[in-house]
Length: 206
Image (cartoon, rainbow, N blue to C red):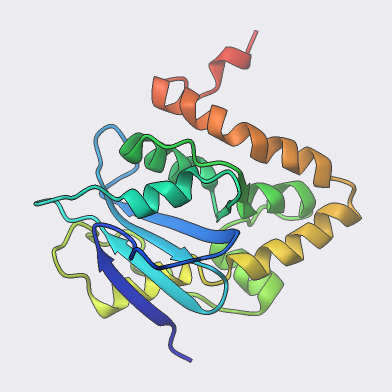
């Protein structure tokens, strides 16, 4: 079944309520938040609907609804590899973006019998769902995104709620749920260090 994709410019609609647990992902022009601009933010409440906020290069407007959601301490934000997305969102919107949950960290803590922790791997292994990553390195700065790009962007958030449920069960089974939460709690600080240039976490070395 085709995902229900809703595309907005600059910000989320005023009347949109995504609940207390929101899956979020981002697409940018590269991996350096100081150099590469944010192009797209994907959000889903886990109901099969994906809300995409495009941030065009020209005529950019503030995003008060999106920033309010990101800053809301009552909303849990689900990411896959949260370290990058949280850093990019913090840098772009000057938000705290917590509390957070990262499916990649969760997988690394409870699925230590393998070294595949990408979103494609998790969807296949835990949900039996095959997702395509062919648009991962496409030009997200385009004025008009292709249908393939929109579908790819949606797939990055549509399964995170179900993955969290599976991973939480595994974390609890392996008695690693508490240490996982401590890792999630540290993520905003980790991204602060990244943005300051300590991205190798050298402050923790001898």
